[in-house]
Image 1 (tube, rainbow, N blue to C red):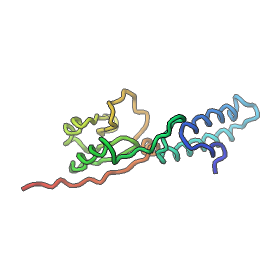
Image 2: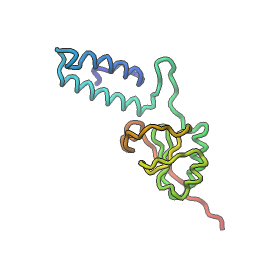
Image 3: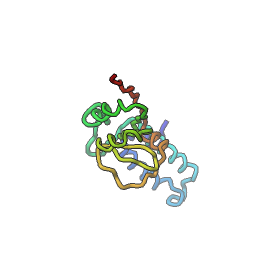
Image 4: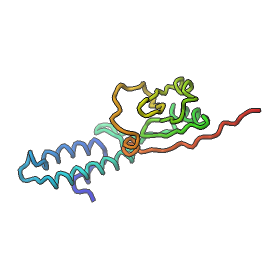
Length: 160
């Protein structure tokens, strides 16, 4: 049961409550607070953040958005095209499409708007241009934070 963040239903609410609890429970800021209680609060924050993130409850305080839907718009179109690429592993991590073992299809992926991540050895599609941020997370950390789903591929039907 949550002790510190039971009323939080969005990630924004959770972050706001976390900052407030940090000020209240940090041993350096409050002489009565203990380090053990601060660690418990931090652990609860991580668990609640993971739960809200995996539920795809991405919203902000003013404008609550619906969970991300992969069946609409360009993403469904992209997945329908690449699912026929034989021998390639397709994984949806958060709101990104990741293609592994995809060297043979690199030109097709680039035309569709994917970019290559050398550190992750994968082609990535997010619907936007490549960001210039450094990858701070491993693939397993990204899977834990955002959730993951492997897309089953269809073998290409060969003519002749």
